[in-house]
Length: 209
Image (cartoon, rainbow, N blue to C red; front, side):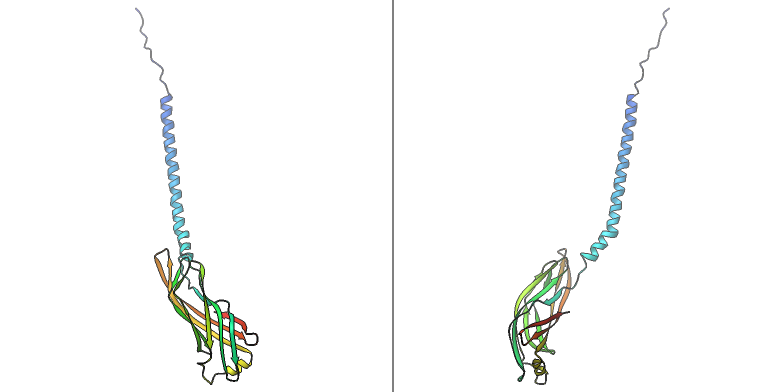
C-alpha cells in the first residue's frame, strides 16, 4: 500500500515583514507630524508673548510730532534805537517731523512771532501731511515789525546793544494714522527763540524746545 505524504508549500514571510515595515513608517510619519505641530505651537506662543508686545511698543506707539523752525535767511533787517523801532523779513522753513509708523495729517495753523510776549508778525501754515517717519518742510517768508509794541518796552536799550531777540510759538492739530484705520489725535507745538545780530544783519542763534 502506497504511503501518503502531506506536501505543504513553505510559507513566504515577506508580506508580513512588509506590513510591519509599513506600520513602522506610518508611526514615524505620525511622530514627525506631532513634532512639527508642537513646533508651530511653540512658535505661536513665542509670537504672542514677545513679538506682539514688541510690535505694540514700537510700531503702534504714537509719538507727538515735532514742530520747529528751520534755517533762517535774513532778507531785510532795519533797526532804529532812537525811535525805537525795527522791521525785518526772512525766509525760513516750517518743519513738522513725524517719527511714527504712519502719516501725520494736520490742519492749517499759525506761527506767531513775538517780542517780549507781544505779537510782531505771523505766518500761516497750510493744511498738509507729514509722511511716515519723515519731515514735512514748508518754505515761508516772514515779515516782522515793531509797530504794535508799547512805548514802555525796553526795545531801545536792546537795539543799542546790537542784538534783537524774538520768539515764535505755534500749534498744529491733527491725527496720526496707523495701519490705515487706527487714528490717534496729536497736537504739535512750537516754542523757539532766535537772536539776530544787528551789525551783520544775520541770525546769531536759534533754539527750539
